[in-house]
Length: 586
Image (cartoon, rainbow, N blue to C red):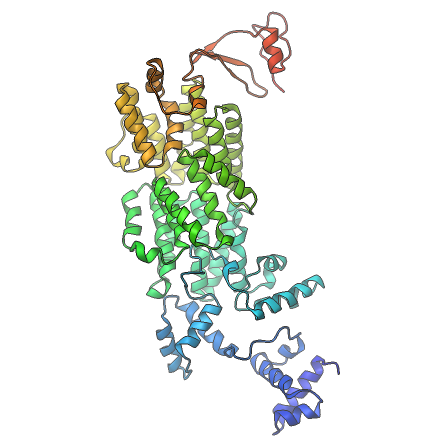
């Protein structure tokens, strides 16, 4: 017999209207009494509409009542820091008696409790939730409905789940059909896939909507993603304001990992504002033993130590994170490691990480381009590095990602210094200071000022890259090998060798002096072949659609090339004497 919606409604209404048993009512309509039992339960939960829709996969027999689940979930959402025992006592006041284990099971099922071995804190990675048989059946059922273009019914099935760890099906359903909980699970995976201003705007709108619905736990989760977007875009002031707002919702020990994540994010904001001591205080109030109970905090710690210039520590935490977190969530750690290895001068490891990242869904594309630009610079391929840095700056301007503009323009400045164009390098350093000042990025402004000025304020020396600049400057003034070795060893000890390779072009005098004396510099041979250090070889600076420039001993030479040299560059022969006409490149 075909079970229709009308039959379900008639059977339930007959049972409720007559003083009869389930078996007797079921026998009258020629159906099984357990089916009638389920229909009655669904009818009491949501009325007749709950019987007209397709039932979908059934709930496990031993699951708590949906009404009770909704009450527990709502209480946790409204008071994120509430403990399980406190929640049990509040339920008793409502006349609801539930065991601690029962409450814990509901919160775990809905992802509202922090568990050290399978929960992420800085990013709500819903893929880590186990797919129970109920979830698997429901997702498969919803997938079939989507294949039949029945979007609304598929959304109803997906929205009824405690969590949906299948991001593919969430992406197939438009946002307007998804519940707020499903949107919280879906949106973080658009990080890096859509322009950052759009990503930030959607995160902000979703968080505000969650707060209006008193879903504060989920609001904190999505607020963390929003804060990360602000950090990525270089807006520490707005980031600090948001974190302080979220911290008001995280009182209580029951949300320790979330409080810790917010504290580390605050440290990132302090670091950008160049308040290094305040940044360090954000971590010293927590014991390291407690931190390492939660593997995903390794990601937070990696970002934090990188922000205050402690690259070696950042690499250490990233490596520990790779040993602890599941494979699905290692992508971001590899992306961080790739960039950190580049800053540490460990280029072979950086390129190895880059190969791993290219096989995965890469979210931090511009970071990886910066790695390549730095690698090309060290190899002496400054034209390729310059072009790649140009590409990064143009993309970063479109996406409004200010930190990438800062990093890429410093690489460009180093290239111009390597070519002997020191005035052009200084102009480029100065160029972006007003932009950084607009976004209150005091740390990056301080780095640029340290490069431009010979006197560095003593309180700025607590930031390792600026201290390194100071040591390099001292070596370039004294021309003593001991001072150079002090700067070199400081960079090696603190994982700043890649930064050392970049800054050394601004103060080449000490290197030149060591080369002339036949002393070892410890620099890669590819760097020592660059024009700024290799005075014997002329350097051809080729700019597309620009004129040919020849340098020797870091001085511009007015010269023309012989036909043989022009043939090597595949250039047209100059017309006339070639002295007054520029050669254009296409």
